[in-house]
View 1 (spheres, rainbow, N blue to C red):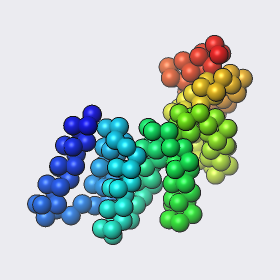
View 2: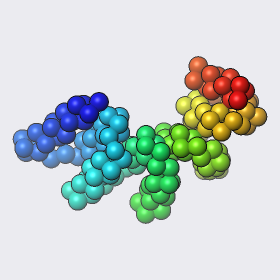
View 3: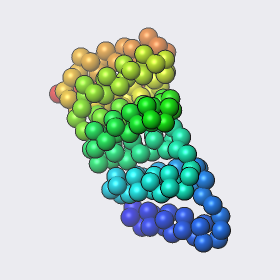
Length: 178
């Protein structure tokens, strides 16, 4: 994985050397590469700071990738702070993918209550959760041994017409086994 990150950085630097100015898409791709390669969370934030210094405005995908990077390493407080910054300082609205990344990061860190609160906030803001969102929330419940809430979320999915998948159902089964 580390080699993939090194290659991504090398390609990004090559782009600069060729006189091609990176844009929002380029920076977002590099931030995503950092977290997908399992690099320390700080690598993603270093790219983010570089993006800001270059005068490139972040968008929801930028923050989604940063939150996902936090989730890889259990930095749930930083994930929450990043969501807050996106909404309050940048005035961006979080969509389904961003909320799903946050719920996943919180669940991975054992913060089931915070994950369920994020799901409720999402619904309050009329952002529609999808299968992956519910799967992340159910997995958070499973990890916390909260099988009743996991099954309640499964019922919510059905009532809302959101299809379950193998991840959703497997997490629900595991929750019942705890």
